Image 1 (tube, helix red, strand yellow):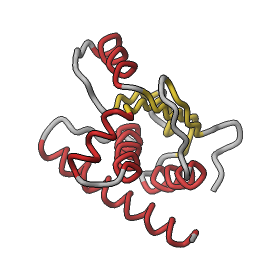
Image 2 (cartoon, helix red, strand yellow):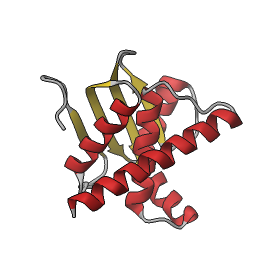
Image 3 (cartoon, rainbow, N blue to C red):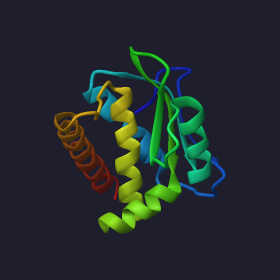
Length: 150
């Protein structure tokens, strides 16, 4: 699956050294989820970073002096377009807490950001339930795609 001409999904590191073992598969997965949500894929930057880096963004742009696992900055409404910043420190800790492997937790948080860019919010309990179901559905799609590639 290709992004529209001139549009890219890119993975970056800030203050961390981490190589995604499945970046191309993740790009295809993100595009499939966007398509399922009726969104064309625009430019998307997914930035893996440290707690300190994400904390500084949280203070500067959102006025929140707390640690978080993800911050999403949308660029537009018509396309899936924006910046997703993810703290690998939070992902590692959450993976231990929830007893899942690092990549499973990272995939869940990546798609959480993608779903925010698709217009989903998680401010209420009801919205959180919808978001969690969408995450689970999207992870099932990734697992299905991954099995087909192996």
